[in-house]
Length: 288
Image 1 (tube, helix red, strand yellow):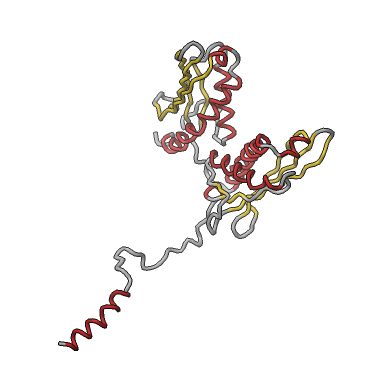
Image 2: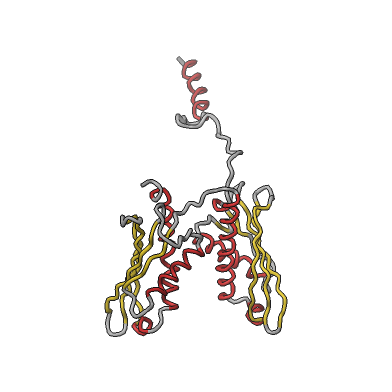
């Protein structure tokens, strides 16, 4: 009996050292070596070189990553994964009178170092603003850079034969806007969608979609109005695929004049929701 107890005592520590059962664990790991990861699925943004204030290099990278995410590009300044693409930016500044001309180059490279694309654009800024590197300048550089990079990546995707994941859309009229600014709001949304890479169609197509807008104003006291905007995405036969709603209180004096600035703000805020509908509709528009 003492021998049996001793044997059990020796077996117990061995049992406690065994790994816990994992009945659903994979017997082997899948091989993903042949899977190609596109830049949109993982883009690491590196600090931007060439700024007058080098301390702003990381800040600009973070702002750029944020703007790229608004355009449905999975971008960050973190470490990424082992097949992430890397985005490096370089700004060359040269004086021209009281201004600085900025030649900006964005290079996208795969994890193995091979170049995926190189996109260039030019900007100009007052010399004093360039030297100060204020927040407004960094925001502008990030916003404009994201537009150029997004367009460049879409061009690369087309050259590689990758289908556009967004359904084609025709911009229709916007009603309910005071005065003659309905077309201005429609044009602002058309511009916002174009900058985001949506495939715009000049005329409604059988396999496309139509975007209509409506605006409703409700008094909120003596000097404010609730502005409600609804974007309806419909099939050419009138069936609605979905809608995007926006609402905000606006001072009355901003509604009585031109809607130029307000139209741009509304369109930029509403475009991401419309893009999500277009992505959802890319299959629905072709399955009728």
